[in-house]
Length: 106
Image: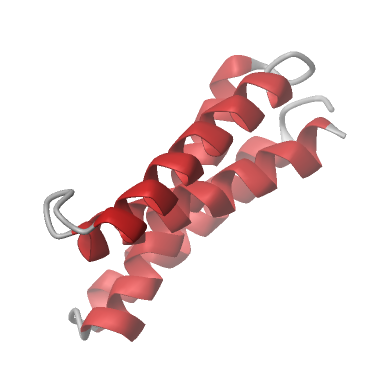
């Protein structure tokens, strides 16, 4: 159950990271409320996941999912560069996330 909570927390982290762009400096009410709600839910689920998973693994996977997801959505939604080097490093982050999962002992 901890892993499921952690993946959902990571996806919510992607949501609030992307949401920051849409808040326009927290001047737009609806995107601001949705972003703050996503932040709170993401942190709450991370906390629940950390009850059963090692904190280093949980935090590393949470950050990794958020970073990879935000970078990929940045490419898709905001036309950020998708250079070969950037894609290689995103792939390495995915390998690191999978490595943390594989070596967590859970």
